[in-house]
Each structure stands twice: as C-alpha cells, then as structure tokens.
Image 1 (cartoon, one colour):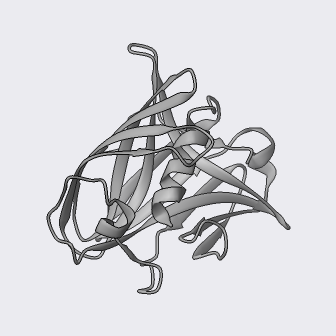
Image 2: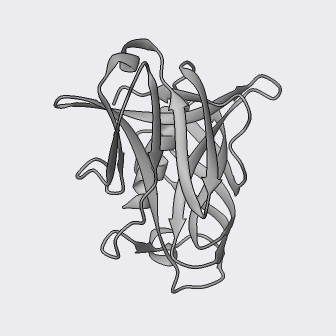
Length: 201
C-alpha cells in the first residue's frame, strides 16, 4: 500500500510548482512538521496526517493564518508493512523484518481534503525535489532500483535509504520526460527553500 502512495505522491509532485515556505525539525526524537500554506488552502480549517492514504486520519491540527504545526505520531502495528513486500524489486534490504509507513499530509475543510506535498524546484538541472516522511520500526538500509508501470505514468526509480528507527526524511529528485517519470530517493534533510503545495487529485 505505501509503495503505491509514494508513487502517487511523486506523480502529483511532478506537476505542482507553487505554494509556501516551510520548515521541519526533530525535537526529543519526535518529528515536528511546520509550514505555511498559501492560495485557497490557507483559509482551510485543518491539516491532517494519514498513514493509509486518507482512509483514516492519524493526527489533525488547526490551520491558522495559513500556518500549521503537527507532531507525527507513531503508526500502529496494523499500519506497518515490510519493505521486502512493498519493494520486491529493490536489490538490497539489510533487515527483512523491518516494516515502515509513509505519512501523507492533507489540507481539510469540512468534507473536502486536498493532499499537500513539500517540494523544491531546481533550475539547474531542471528537476523537482520532493521531501516526504517515512517511518521505520528498526534501523534498516533499503537500496536498489525498481520500475512501476501500473500507474497513470510509468515510474523508474533508484533508492538509497539509510533509515533509523522512527521517522526519517526522504528526499526524492524527480525528472520528467514525455510519458515517463524518473526518480532518485535518499535519506537527507528537506532542501532549503522547499515549499508546501496542495495537489488536485
């Protein structure tokens, strides 16, 4: 499930190019995410985090003057999925017992919900760099490459993740070509100047 969530996230991130400044930090081994939203979603009432791609909300906070701050909770055991099941094409997983979950962020207004992403647009070379948040239940390395041709846009990707137990920031460089999407992911801090973007699904 969380592989498809990542692929969908990357596809929509490749289309979006505007929003607001954001920052995140790690405090006492807890991930606190904060940011500013512009445009119509700045006036929406809440921001929520989902681990199951919007079927349920794991945490919710108010949006005030377009700003939000939220602590990422620990996913329940029923949410976690093994990396070797979700990434069967990846060449090397250092601990096949390891499980993880992806956090997706949503601006909410009543029954409406719009997914948010954290991106940085780079001009040289032309690419979008997206940051997302991946939980691991133990220290694990996930390395290799895979292809996904089931979605709306074929995706080829290389992965080099050095995950600690708990929440990790994963940065993905996204390059598009006609009819295809190429990505490269690694664990790293979110790029300076990253912006929060609302996606139309």
